Length: 267
Image (tube, rainbow, N blue to C red; front, side, top):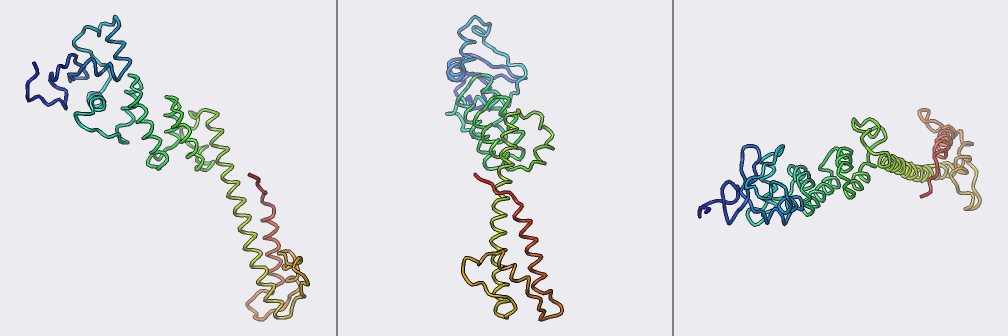
């Protein structure tokens, strides 16, 4: 009979009708067959089938770490001690839950991993993607692909584990990076032309007020190209340290030509 003062939190002694012992490394965990079977189809099958564990009082778990099994047991016995899912425990808990088919714990671990990727508390998003691929975690894979599109193509190509990324996932990431760069290119082009238009108009207005350029007679002529064309006729210099407006206009025309070569992206 279990002693009245036994602390069940460490599972080190019999308690509350515990009827089976898990032996991990050099430690023994006194637990309940019914609880293990409730959480894990693997244990349920073990206890109901003709496996030797069905009648054994002790079940060895070779290759497992006692500290990790104890943590898992606290998740299976939540009334004993609340154990939060954290960055430091979610990986081994997930792997144990995956092995023993404990879906609810596995799902909570995956949800935390997804949150870590979204909040960028996990630095290596491709390593997380590869982890998700290993266990076919669709939500984690999708989130990692989305976040990996923030990388540069150089970062993607030079990642030490790039070859482990599945081809379809790699393609989705690369396409996403290119689409992001195209959007940035389109935005840069639009903003640059806008500022160039403002500069050209102001310079033209300045030259027109000086009387050194000809007038544009209607609003349809008020374009960047026309302003710069008029400015090319202004060779006046008010200060020997300043370039004439026709030189500035030539430089702006060349700049506009370079900007115009940027592609127009349709989304």
